[in-house]
Length: 228
Image 1 (spheres, rainbow, N blue to C red):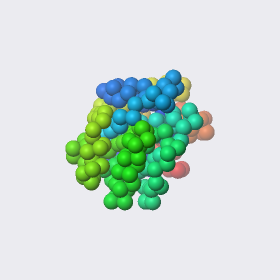
Image 2 (cartoon, rainbow, N blue to C red; image 1 turned 45 degrees about the vertical axis):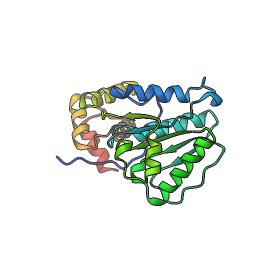
Image 3 (cartoon, rainbow, N blue to C red; image 1 turned 90 degrees about the horizontal axis):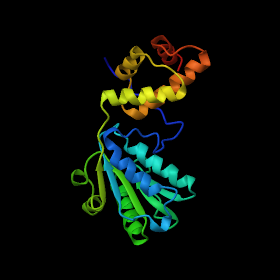
Image 4 (cartoon, rainbow, N blue to C red; image 1 turned 90 degrees about the vertical axis):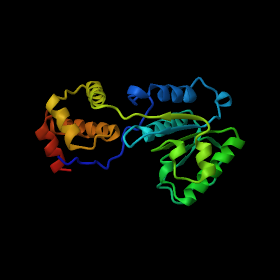
């Protein structure tokens, strides 16, 4: 059965707390320690961190969660992803440099990322980057590739289906809604299985159920799709 990929954003915004680690507990704890409210900026380690894993492993969730955590503390953060065609230069006001989907960077973006990395090292700023492969396998310029790999490196594992079910069940319980096994099966077989899309799908289903004052069932989900 063909899966349906949802091109939707994360309305509530990713957080480190909403990241279900499963086998990736070490990277969650590492990032929590770095952005902790009790950690003073002057004592934060400038050693870079690189996380990698296939689509759906949670890389972008983690980077956006770190960005929001720092913003809530009043920090300014430099962000770069493959959609930014004209990257701005390094800003000394940045508390950290975040580089998402580095495996997709163009030559211009790679140059900007390298420039940010060098300046971040000079000014003792942290770099947090993410890609779909390990640093050794990245198809980017060599000086950028080696820098991405010299600090902390974490390989993310995609959650198993039982773990994804557990996340959905936990999120549904937190909303006070009940998902039957049949609804869970439908969500996992008919839609994109990456966790970010599944969690946003749950948000949409819950909102539609409240709007229509109906229980969450497969016919309700089909109705939501027909009326979207």
